[in-house]
Image (cartoon, rainbow, N blue to C red):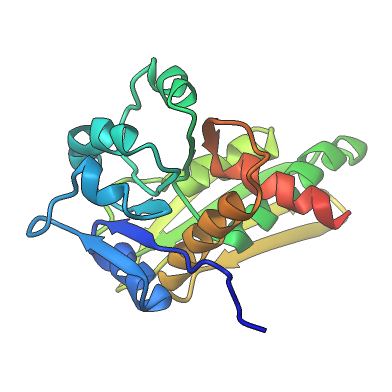
Length: 231
């Protein structure tokens, strides 16, 4: 019996560190776009889905192009203020876009753990919270966006400290302390490949779950939907 399963064709826009890792992991069946091969709606429409890792200042130049192509898209762009009307435009086009500042699957498990710790800490006597993050020496923002997200996920006031060392990919620690005990939670990124892996997982999840309504989704929503399927 012949295998008639259709091979997925991926468009990868942006071939920097993370986009390059996406290309390395996908291998064949990809169409790569960068400054030397700029995307057009016609070219993008030849693929099933787009995975996009471009800087914020480049995103505004391709949003309309990706919309015109009418294919789902996974965006790893940070530092960009998405237009207020974009969710409605995406939905009107009948496509699904997923946007994430951190596509690490492990980090999203941490997010769920942080929410549990934050809520559960209300049962403890006088808990205090400290978040410490370490990144490479060239990282400009301090504290990191992820550290600020940790505080948001925790839902509690926390002191945040930062350190810059070598080429550290990212280390985040939470210390919950009371008079009688301490709880620690740590996430360390060993390689930037984890962000590529998460984006590819998201692309495949979207393609294999066509019942997900057209719209503009944060990565956390898609992760939580898949997590719920495990319960």
